[in-house]
Image (cartoon, rainbow, N blue to C red; front, side, top):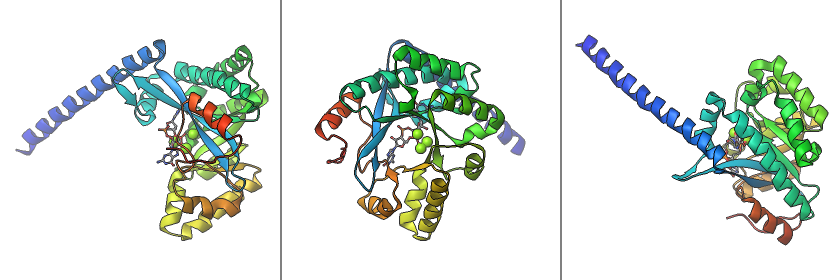
Length: 283
Ligand code: C2E
Ligand code: MG
Ligand code: MG
Ligand code: MG
């Protein structure tokens, strides 16, 4: 009967939920261990001024090299956010980025700009900006080398977020809006927050190649960003054709066409071999 069916579905559902919860608990425990046992690393993806070919900075991207294999951020970041573990993990990320940056600077790249992703959840920590300040002081790194990437999820608590952003800016950090154009409140966020960089989501760039009408939209977004005095970074450039299309717009590009995110050691080589210029594509 339908009733019986419903009951079976319910049992199936709770069983699935059970295994989902088990999986989540398991991931949570594994993430705690990962922090203690240094299983995290940061990889760096270059950002290139398309017109000049110069590397203007690097985005730090978290990698989890677990004993069972690499786990992608799309899988563990959401769990880290839900469990609050993103708070200590985020602190580790900032400190590690400072340490890596000192090495890059020692190689003569004093101007390299480093972007670090920060979740809205980290903003909820009442001590967040204090902790950020402490990390930069302890590591003797100037915050003006750093940019914080946030997404429109900070809009959920805009009053609080705006205050945190002000505190971060007072420290000398710059603010980038990540994944711009991917969500629904993109325009809302730039109305409310004084940003330094606008990162245009990969999906917009992909759409441009499918339908050139989208180029007008992309051009308009770039125009808005420039009028707001923001630097524009276009994410996810994979094809030469995309880079060529964007060249006249005076924007910065990031994507596999130029390089995949690289471990710091490879960035060292990248920097000393090709000072400022990207001469070869990443593998
Ligand atoms: P995101 O900040 O938008 O980072 C860009 C993502 O696009 C990265 O994925 C990068 O590897 C990937 N990507 C770059 N160029 C290309 C390309 O040409 N084609 C394609 N298909 N992908 C490209 P990744 O490293 O897997 O990170 C995914 C997301 O996880 C990030 O998106 C960010 O939201 C989050 N994340 C990564 N590291 C951190 C971190 O340290 N803290 C926090 N809170 N979130 C992080
Ligand atoms: Mg990002
Ligand atoms: Mg992004
Ligand atoms: Mg993203």
